[in-house]
Length: 76
Image (cartoon, rainbow, N blue to C red; front, side):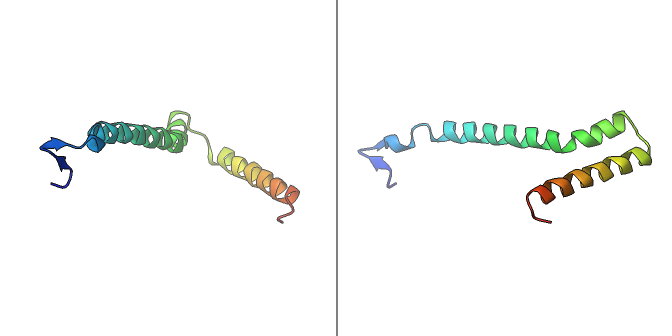
């Protein structure tokens, strides 16, 4: 092996697997929290069902707010 020096493992590889595990855990933590932020709306709609009129009203208000922001930025 190229990493062997006098029959000993090079110090460059010390902690490599521990670093891989730490990065894997941190990555999964980010993915799980991001997934929960994306799916929380589905859970609350299941938990507190609303009529279609409220959903339509929500989207109308949301679109109006987006248009107002774009107008202030002079994009529209």
